[in-house]
Length: 170
Image 1 (cartoon, rainbow, N blue to C red):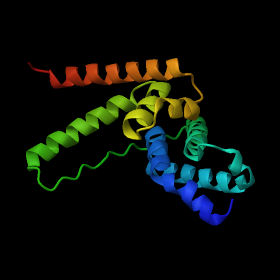
Image 2: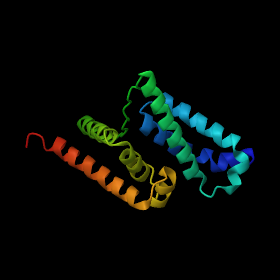
Image 3: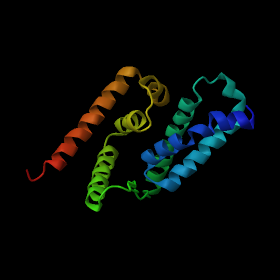
Image 4: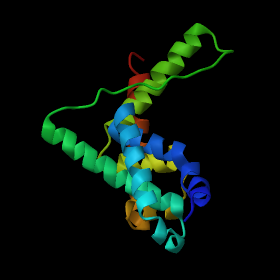
């Protein structure tokens, strides 16, 4: 693999890889470090790249494994990354609508973050990144039934908790 092929096949998925690492780690700096390590590993194994059919899925699997390693390392050290919120940018919304949207997104992100690891990964890959079920199976090394069940449970858990939050006081 030459530099141009690397840029076209690997660097084109940089944003998805970063968002996935950020979702898992909850810290932008840690996600950037993981992403850099992913690119180094892919570049160092560039001779084997011709054998890989779905480069993006393979890179997502590396990102997942490195992020899990980083989480384990942080837990052993006793340090935990500070969670960062996501900004919602709308120019035509009124201030009260912006605040409500921001609170809703914060609630959804917190609910997703509270899910078990497998459910959190599956819902992120499917609903945020837009991967197909087959790609998720390949990335997470799970069978199709596990992916579908995890996604169903994750969506239901988020939906039920969000309904309880929104129905408070009624």
